[in-house]
Length: 271
Image (cartoon, rainbow, N blue to C red; front, side, top):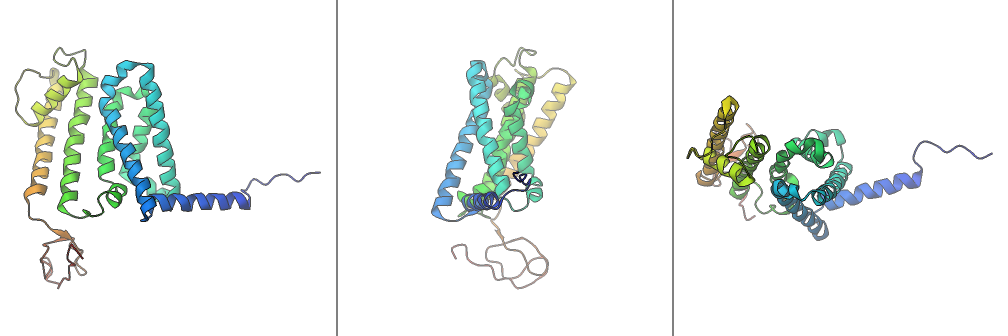
């Protein structure tokens, strides 16, 4: 009689799994030229996917072709997320990251476009999650990590993401029910005019909810604009934790910590 097969993985299967995990860690977290080229290719694909998300309200009219591309992107994003999860040491720790939940929600909108299409505007959060990820800055921005370039890029990503998320929400909610919102460009025009508090008044949203949305866009827009201006014009500070009080940001030429007076030894940026 043949012996029953064990439910536990065999030694060769475990070895293959360990080799695959090591390979993925090498590609996603390694510093070799090959690993960097791999991550650059992933980032390029990410930007192409974000471009598709941006054009989705227009491309949706293509019907079946749109859904084919939609599911293809879902497969690519699903493989990428699965690979990142498997390459991570602690899955629970990986799931605690907000950018991971954003990507999972984006994947859900791609897998169920017929049911979650009205939430498709939230796919543009992928831009924010990409430009705020360690994956991006370790690959493209390693020279600009913890510099003014990184701060400005993050602030600009927040502003651009907010503009297009609100535009998508206005388009999905008020298109067809409001004569002023007949296309995606109308929704973008309303968002920018409201966000900049220009207030031309040629497109206004009806009802109390329309007024509430306009107020939220104006207040949030002003906040994001101020943050962007602050990161551009404020004096640059370097990230160097004080060994005594833990203060993170200091002037590049600081000798003493402003909080506790501890002597600092901040390395030069070119070092």
